[in-house]
Image (cartoon, rainbow, N blue to C red; front, side, top):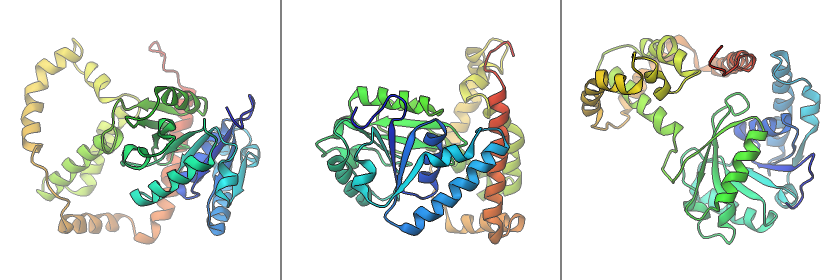
Amino acid sequence: MAGETEAEPRIAVVGAGLIGRSWAIVFARAGFKVTLFDADAQALKAAKDWIAETTRALARYTLIPDPDAVCERVTLQDDLAAAVGDAVYVQECVPEELSIKRTLFAALDRLAPADAILASSTSGIVASTFTGDLAGAARCLVAHPVNPPYLVPLVEICPAPTTDPEAVARTRTLLEQAGQAPVVVRREVRGFLLNRLQGAVLNEALRLFEDGYASAEDIDRTMKYGLGLRWSFMGPFETIDLNAPGGLADYAARYGPLYETLGQEQADPRPWQHSTVQQLEAERRQHLAGDALTARQAWRDRRLMALAAHKQAQSDDSSN
């Protein structure tokens, strides 16, 4: 592939916001050379400082051995052509606006090597809406990460109908080499997998709160001390497979009618009412002042680092 050496393939990350700088860490800690592009010099400076601080924190949790080496693999660039000119893979991380993505992908298709993969970090916009008319549409797809991607390894690969299956395979291999946990969404669906699953939980959480069944704090505690513990190392299907003596089919026979009834009650979609959101906002601010959000986000990331270190030390072997 153009611009690639066996030891150090070149990755371009376009956009130096929170997701872009996180992607830079993902690829650099795996040994890739990374060019991080942003037209805003201040954004690049902030990203450089953040990457240095974050890699030091990762080293304290033994998640990387040498933070300086990771930082040295990241080159800052304010010229798009120079950033992507020798890339084997480009990860787009610009705002979630269709017009911006269309304009950028047209530029990437012109500027990147013809065999470079062009991937979007979009949270829910399907690739066909901003890549379908490009000459290089076959190498375009979505690679949606979970925030923050340097701590949460899932990446959803969602091709457009025009995407070459070989591009999907190459992307999956590269992301696995980068230490991520890619999954493939077999055909386009808005929101992909994670946000559709998360949306189902959020919609029901809002419904339970709005109808007065529980406080925001207790709904959060239900996830924190209940479902979330299992879901941190098992998915929903494995969970129910283990929750009945005879496995998944036995569980379905026992509890399927209950979930069918619940599904009928939940089938009527509700808008996210402004009044409900304001009530939730008020309850959350009672527990966490608005000016403490940034510090709490850092706390969240430290907890994720500790969890990642724990999971890294464990084995998926069923005998353990």
